Image (cartoon, rainbow, N blue to C red; front, side):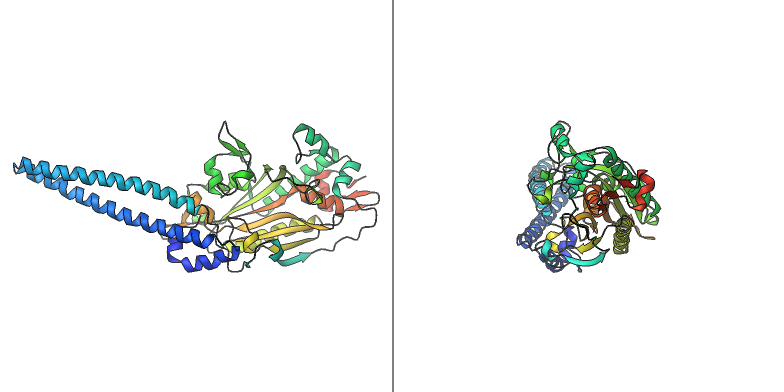
Length: 425
């Protein structure tokens, strides 16, 4: 959530940055927030003035009583009552203004970084890097859903029977390959200095609000109404909320955590190759990286996280490209996001497998996560970052498709110690 102080002091800068999101409603929301803030501060000043008058007259009542002027004391006491009623009404107005103001602020996304391009959609994203050669497969090439059926790696129809579309059942070497990738990604994160955690899969409303999934993505989250809990759409939510309402030690920067979890998303269903097979699921596995960083160094941290994800894809021998998202395609909470896409040779298309984002202090303002600079008494908001390292379904899809030959599928060398087999045939 953007801070009111930032909007007050840097309104023009905020509006210039928000214009990159190509959302015509945002300038009006900023003006509405600032007007509600002005009204709130005005009423607060009035309430403080009334309270000061109450305090003054209360002393006057005591003075009159000590002087034996009971009638005068009663007159002043009656005026005190009037002022108290006025303060009560002003406080009620403040509560309503506070609610209205927060409701507006919740609708304003993060301000994009200076390097983020203006744009409405994915068509205007910027490609910043490309790695690897796209394999030249012959007529034998099959999409991953056909390979999965041929080699008994997963069963989509069984998943529909048990749960519905978007819940595949991994079987045999397909299940082992899933487990192998999870272990590989976690081990690589540990080598990079990330401390592994195993967080809950259900979170409360405060946690969803803290990282920005609520109220922005409420319709995409599975909700357990009886317990008032949400199934996590990503491990970012519980891991980042480990730092909610705390003051971190500045000497601990950067604070690095990673975790594997299943993820659950109620994404809108559709038909066709773009969502077929593993391309879009309601439940999927992912290893997530989260960093709590010093504001002065968060973009260095972002670059390092991007390099880490790139190293994973290189070790899996998957051709990829990195896109810096334009303002209109970027998530609500992000100030800058890099998407990784791997090339699926059989489908002849790029598949997104990771997003790595710097949220600056947008999340930490909601989380109330702060630190103190050395020698300072005043606290300051930290910066938060996260990235998928990696989401498994589309990585698996590309791995099966790109590493296939006429006789089966070759396992990348980096995964072989984890799978226990070199090929699927």
